[in-house]
Each structure stands twice: as C-alpha cells, then as structure tokens.
Length: 189
Image (cartoon, rainbow, N blue to C red):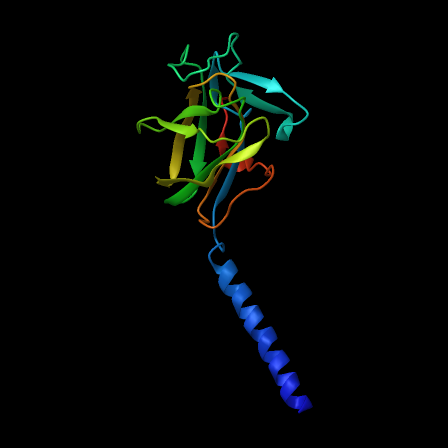
C-alpha cells in the first residue's frame, strides 16, 4: 500500500513537471523588445518629453493637456509625434503593448504608424489616471527582421506613453514596468 502511494506521488510530480515544460515551451526563444518612450529617435512638438519619478526610466512622452480640454473627440491640433527606430532581430508575429496613462475619455489614445502602413488608433481604453498596459492582449503585427519605424502621433491631448513592448511570445502580457532592451533601439548619432 505504501509503495502504491509513493508511485502515485512520483507520477503526480512527473505530470506536474511535464505541464510546466509544455507551458514554458512557447516562450523559449521568444523575442522581447522594451523601449523607454524618452529614447525616441526624433520628436516634434507638440509631443514632449517630461521627467517624472513615477515613470520607468524617470521620464515619459505626452501630448500636453490643452486648456480648455476637449469634451469630444476631434482632429488633433497639430502633427506632433515621437519616432522610434527599432532593429527587430527576427521576422515573426509580434504583440505590441504600450504603458500608458490617460487623462480621460478624450485624452486616451495616440495614432500609431509603423513603417509605411496606415496609421491606427492606439489605446482608447477606459482606464484613466493610472499607468497601465494597452491593449490588454496586445496589438498583433507582422514584422520582418531589420529596422522598423514606430511613430506615436498626436490624436488626443493628455495622453502619455512611458514604454512600449514587442514580443513574439503570444501568451506574454506585461503587468508592471519592464526593463529596457537598448540593444534593439537605434538612437541618432
């Protein structure tokens, strides 16, 4: 009887180990690129860099809040943007997340333009006045290996961006600030 209990425990431990191996297999070899928003390649007003003790890396970028602040969505008042150049190490499908802080429902998004693709609305969720990752499951994009441009552009005043993250691990969802991976970021000379 005792040997049967020992065998059942050993089998349970072996099954648990197998489950852990299967669950982590998808992330083996996954690429994760983390960019601090203040490490842009170029920036144009009204997009601005702000130092802050509550942002990772000590700074973030934002579209300054206008007074009076709009109560409905309209066209951006200017073409302010921050441009990033990222050297993607391998081709694949990536999930893109941004660590954002929204002012309110009319200050909760950017336009995002990747390379020569049409701009899309990035953000636009209902979590306000706190740093959080958007979108919840990531924006799925296909990238080739090599240099790509990411342009976060003015859409609504009051929107802030602290970091953005690209990963090929489709199950990964960031929770808090991440450690930057500078080897993938191209900075101006």
